Image 1 (cartoon, rainbow, N blue to C red):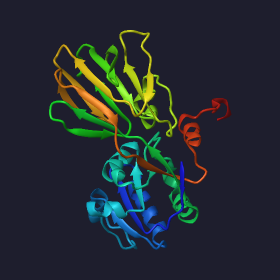
Image 2 (spheres, rainbow, N blue to C red):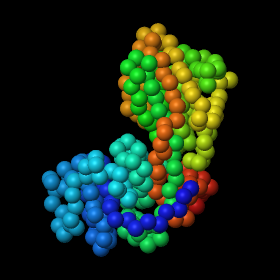
Image 3 (tube, rainbow, N blue to C red):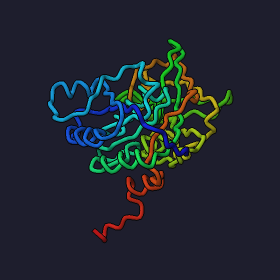
Image 4 (cartoon, rainbow, N blue to C red):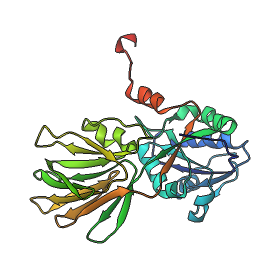
Length: 298
């Protein structure tokens, strides 16, 4: 974890405009930024929202363009984890720290509550913030050599209600095993609290230099999640009775045929997650998963 105290001159705002509470959160954010000497840039979705909704006494702002990405000091993501992921796909490769403001429910990536916007922004401008660097997965398909990235996981899944699939798994050129299951997840430490959490996998700290392979509803109950170094290469060959299976990257799904071979490695960059000073990952786990909470004390 790196501690950063830079002079924030340029802030970009991203958000899910259909989220409940987005209008109020945006107003609160503009209000606290109005007395900061910063340039405010808005993602196209947020800018379009303002065109259709009049908010009075707004500080000056402009539309965010791709050529602006490398000069952004801090990106603010208003929404849930899905909104954070979309923000990361846009500015993450440029090395922009992203602060998640939670307008959703659970949200492991967005840990600033919507009612603490003023407090959090003032704290960051006066005290700085820490940065957690999160590993990213890079998937290459053999059919078109296209490459895609995922911050949480790459999921190989059966299609709809078809029978289970077989996933022949090769690690660093050596055969590991064939998973007979509804699917297989390849997760980053960030993704250990996403899809992997629901299949009983372990939680990994963000700084952990590992990837995790977790079967989804395996036919053999002795198959368990496997953790490997994140500089190893994973190759997958999939067999499905329907000749088709799904590949999902953080929920973005596409259809593959049996002859498509998948290759997964660590991407050459990390996603930088901005955190308030003294707000650690342990805080996030306790708050989101309610560890140690006692229902009798309600």
